[in-house]
Figure 1 (tube, rainbow over the protein chains, first blue to last red):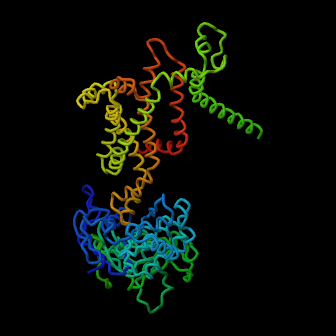
Figure 2 (figure 1 turned 30 degrees about the vertical axis):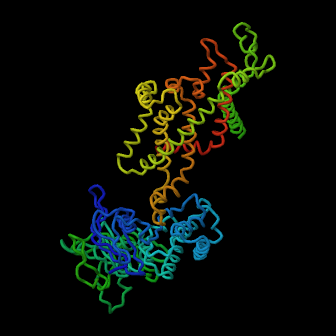
Figure 3 (figure 1 turned 60 degrees about the vertical axis):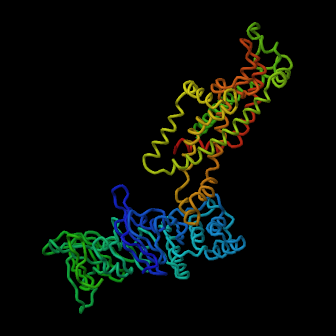
Length: 346
Length: 287
């Protein structure tokens, strides 16, 4: 049994199912990312685990214990970091970090000591006397993390904690968050709509859409063996190219696997395509080539190739070139329901 | 360049002129009260007969005789005490009812919260001149005629709905995240209200205290209806009853009472003006 587990968990708002029968199992010490577009139910799922939302039906277990609807958030042994950080504006950074310890009835001297330790962990010792309004976004985030960490919870719940940081800070914060989680070994559930964050942070990723979990797997597997066309196009930027083969089949390949023929080893098993180049974007580290397939059965299907800087083949707009994909990177999907078919283990 | 500068100066001057005018408008009643309270009668009542009389300055030396009359020959201090008593009890009752009600309405999701909020506000629109008839019945059933407690019973009927509505806006402006965070941080809903919501709603509570108290101070109709002996009157009732005798107005003493009563309130308003404005706009925008 997982450390955090949900069984057929459901939440219906009015008659709209926000979470539609989710079975999820997070191992002890694991960093699991819930990834999906906004409105896919990932936050509702997390809030039900936290006890902030009452499930319509289904069960939640934390550390082997059944969390009924009447187990309040405070009794679940969780710490949560909200997207807004939810720092108490009337308390200093130190007061914020101490607040959960005071609730737990920790003695005064011990509180002071643990606040100091928590602050040291995030390098915010000198910020302790300040109020939240006197802190920058990055500093607020650290205070919120310190507050979550000091009480040594069983589970961390993160609701898009990095989305209020600017892009530069976000990469650093992502690295630090991952390092922290490894160091503490605390089971972590992390909600995001940003696939880069999910790929970088998660031991495993659960991709959600329309209230359902579509695939739970390691980042590598999600990327290379997406369970269906939604996962294939939601994860990865630019998304996976999908080509209609016939009435029943879609063929998919990642843009960075789609290269000019000269770029392949002559002995490689390559599926050939002819690409009519429409537009080339030079991004420095790579070139994005937009075009349509100039093919036998179905043509005019837009595709993107992502060529690394090491592929120097000159490409002119409006011209037709020989491209290809190694057969082992080609995926097939059912055109009706989008599910992946054969071709490689999941 | 010079044109633009000239224009800026003119705009500035106009702004200051407008501010000066508004200030004058606001200060004038106080000045008039001050003047009238301290003028001798022969300076006060000559305007009708002497057309060259200048009314807005002291033409003969000021006197304290009106103030003396107010303090020594009326029950002014008793009325102050009565008003403070009724005000304090009504403010306490108002807070006890309006704070939880406002919180509940602010957090009640769905259409019902909104409808109840509007319904509450509508009760404020029923005029006291209609309501005092049923209230008279209630007061007599409770045997509270001619007692300050009748006012303690009646006044919350308009302070509670209004202050509930005001506080609703305040509580709504407190992010729900904060409460949920505190609940995760180990507190029960009640502890969260005590430790997070109330400290953040201080400006709202203060607004309510000031508002409820001034409403009590101004109230006249109910006081007139339910209180008959001078010793049990509140300020708003006692002052006119004692100082307007038939068609004789003791203008000097009336104005002295008005001035002395309004100064403490003006000071309190000014001390909390920032929070007060914040409170009113919260109510206005999010109520």
